[in-house]
Amino acid sequence: MSRNFQAQRLNLQELAQDGQPWSETTFITDLPRLAAEAQGLSASDAVQWQATGELRPQAGAEDQVWLHLTAKASVPLTCQRCMTLVATPVEVDQWYRFVASEEIAMAEDDGAEEDLLVMAPQFDLMDLLEDELLMALPLVPMHESCPVTPVFSAGDPAVEAAEAKPNPFAVLGQLKKS
Image (cartoon, rainbow, N blue to C red; front, top):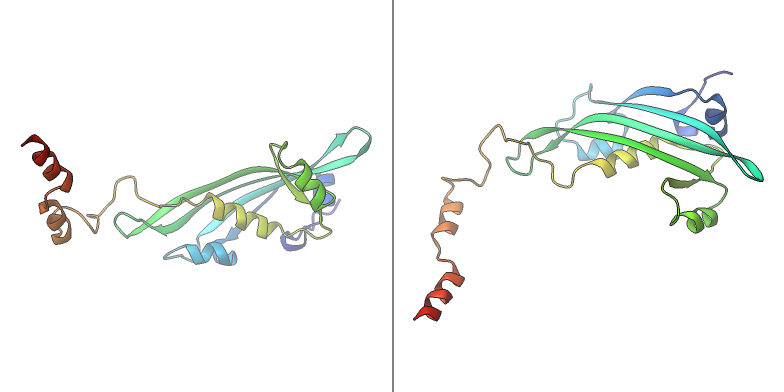
């Protein structure tokens, strides 16, 4: 069988019949929504991903198409503590089961551990990959230990002014004691 797969117009049935892992490297700049989230993106920043399709038998019906997608990337984001770039590791490891219609997907979704997607003649694997990477991004990217002093830290006039004000509850506590 020829392995002439195209990620934007993937025939899932052929991928599942092939059964072999399909590994690729995609530059983050080729994923526009993910690239918009990144800061200081270089031309070499990339996502290593692999897709494996398989056919699983089901009683009394055609075999079901399943897809296993894994991906790893390091996305440069802005640390919310020190406001410098932080290389943020992002990983995806997800199974998908394909069904015939949106109605079937909605009906079976609550009882399924895997994600359910509707079978399409030409499936856009790049959109799915980008969606999963975006969902895997942290809500608040931060260094474990910031390499520079955070923007609001000791010695900052705004921080010192806030610390100089008396705590309003402490004042109430003093009134209660007297």
